[in-house]
Structures are given as C-alpha cells and as structure tokens.
Image (cartoon, rainbow, N blue to C red; front, side):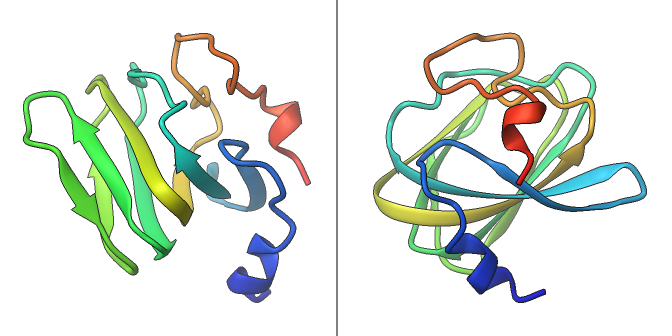
Length: 119
C-alpha cells in the first residue's frame, strides 16, 4: 500500500479513514484544514500523530502550543486534553486503539463513529 495514494481517497476534512490494523491498533489517515477539532481527551488511550504533508498546530494541556511539520511525530498521552488545527490543508496519520473515540467524549459537528471511519 502506498500511503500517499491512500490520502487521495480522503475527501473530507476532519474525517479520519481507517486504512489498516495491527495488534488492535488502527492506522488512520485524515486531512485537516481549519479549527473544527474541539478540545478533547481519550480517557484510556494514547494517540500518535504523524504529519505527512503541510503543518499542524498542536495544542496540548499543560504545554505551549507548537507547530508540527512534515514527518514530525507526537504522542498525546491518555487523559490529556488536546486539539489540532491547520491554516492550510494538512495530511496526518494517526495510530490509536480501536476503542478510541474520534473526539473523545465531546460530540461535535465533526465527530465520526467507528463505522463512519471505514473505507
């Protein structure tokens, strides 16, 4: 599988798509543009972010905001409030547990169910 080609299948912003699974961890692709992701946390799961194209503003509870660039990686620890945004289109890969809810316990206009994240 070519990951960059798989990004072409992601048509909507803030709508992660599951592309694979390994040992109960889901590998997802998403495109981000704008500030629609609400502050949220994942009570029991860590979440890995890898920027593949563009830049991503990462806001994490207890830390100064920082910008991730192409090929930067960051892990948000379980229970930590966070949100992401991007002024221009940004492509990210996420690795997270199957049990991870897209926007934690926060329901918003961009929240997607597990079924909505399937290709």
